[in-house]
View (tube, rainbow, N blue to C red):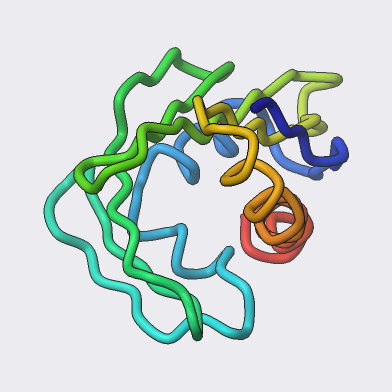
Length: 131
């Protein structure tokens, strides 16, 4: 399963955007309003839960300066990645898009497609004010 958020343009440099997304504690500022728990576990790992959903632990798996940050599942039964693609448009203009990739069976994919799409859209939309 591959899902992509809409692209958003930020009035920040690629470096500023990358630094923000590389610091896992900043993801608390991007979370939807229905977040029920957020906890930084270490420098590159955090736990969050949305109301009515199980807790999810994400770990920073890869960081390519000023262009990409990859977070992946750090435990649990499902393996997935959340990828932040950063593209510099101008000195202080950057385009960001989030991608979600996972290997789910057809039933699971059907159940989670809507909520995950809404989740990544909320994260990227909240970047406009948080970064």
